[in-house]
Image (cartoon, rainbow, N blue to C red; front, side):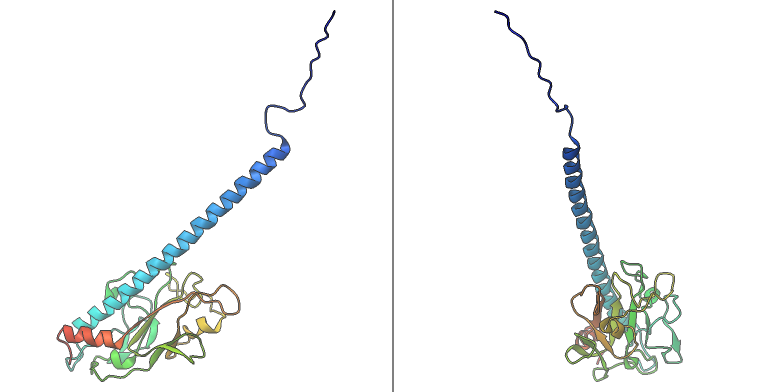
Length: 235
């Protein structure tokens, strides 16, 4: 009896087929995309956290400035805004050249910009920044922070000073080269750039009709007064 040996050749090669390679590439792309998005989100959160820390340092520096600077009558005062971009406050006589401007970072011994390389906006109420008559426990102010541009609901009132970082989008900010960025479109972000006594602070909203990513802090009058009393500057 004779046996015939049959050799069967497989059509499959030892490597990946084109379909398998395509599937692998799609999976790798999805994983890489998710990784990149995760890295981007972490960077954004770190920038927010770093800028929030800077804003707290600004408030502390303003308290320290008031405790160590006296007006002509011996009472404390806050610095004026920087209006020419050199990091130093600007005054005309005893009063601020402009109550709304940039943070005088050099006078305060602070970093000049936020995590997105934009300058901090600083608004000081004129009653708290005079160098002829300093502020007392009865000094009044009309600065306020609201939860929307219409300001039908307030978060804080009677504020001596407000400080703003214009966030990741930087709309309305002055950049590190002292050049104004593009103006914002949304009403809430516009309210933080129009130099009036009202400011807006709320959780971020995505790009669109009411985009908002500003970070806003304010100097509480009660904290300011208590710090001045503790330092022996008031009453």
